[in-house]
Length: 220
Image (cartoon, rainbow, N blue to C red; front, top):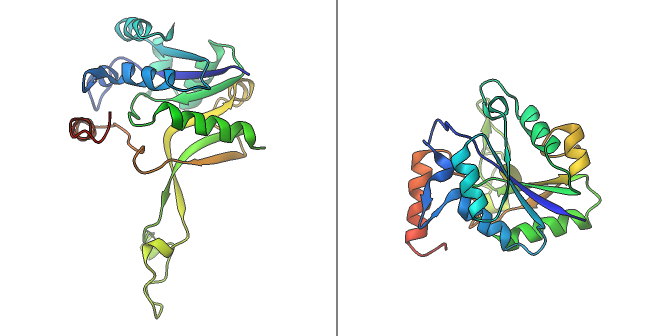
């Protein structure tokens, strides 16, 4: 079955100007993500969609198939995520979609392969990556997942784990994603991302932190 990785980006990013073309080390975020996906043994195609000609040309240089997206589907102020996902799926045809983001710079090819393998071996209709949380949480002014008034304080490591959707990996059959117009279905498999791979660039501070991690030699 053909596995197609989708990357989307848009011109006019707000919180970080021209974010997808920002540099990490010697690579742009777009170039870095294409390289990581190329290192996957199970990804057959890489498709990059954008309304920015500069980004499209840049992605094509590094080996991605490119698709020009209409401005409407790249404008988060008027277009819903469901419309955006559905439109991108309408523009391709494949067997399985791996939706990835260039703003998750530390997810490497082997991790994508682990996620694809988990999806293929599961009976679930989709897969999404999550981060495990073991923290003392409060909701609506009350303890959410522990009792601080019990006779013994429960260390965080003993708490029942909760899971945060991290946005790094979504996998679903193309026909299902095209029909439901969302990242995952009603019965997803949870793929736990390790803490070393979890990072999402949303702000200038995030970008500076990622650059610091790269320059430290902790990440390549």
